[in-house]
Length: 201
Image (cartoon, rainbow, N blue to C red; front, side, top):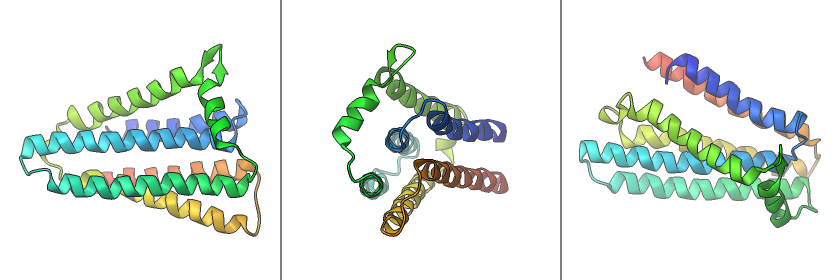
């Protein structure tokens, strides 16, 4: 993926939750579920990249397994932290009902679950093809380079959720404040990754 495509992806990643909040009137939890789907998709893609890299280099699966276990723990921690944070913001929330509503939510007469989940999966796979398979990055990348950005993002999410939980003991903001903060932090991290990639050539 070139720099222009990376910036387009950054804008797209920010636009979906913003449209959801301001145009479709999505709740904070709806938007966070979208991010959760994206996190799971990125976890799967990291395994696909690792498998291809291992197949090409023949380095064995030990390092892949170690990184995968660490990432799975961080993913679980981030998902739990997100849900705990939402609970502290909205103590009366019914997660099961919200999840069912999220999957059954209709836009233009089509249930969101039938569109959004395949869309996230397809987008992640297309990005994997364009950014990893086609340029044959598996020829020159190592396992650590594959997992480090993903695990860093999981750590940031967990820390952000922890900060939200702490602040909620003092003050609870309007949902839009949280949405804008999430989009802002996510965009800043993606921008940093783009610039770092450009600096490394």
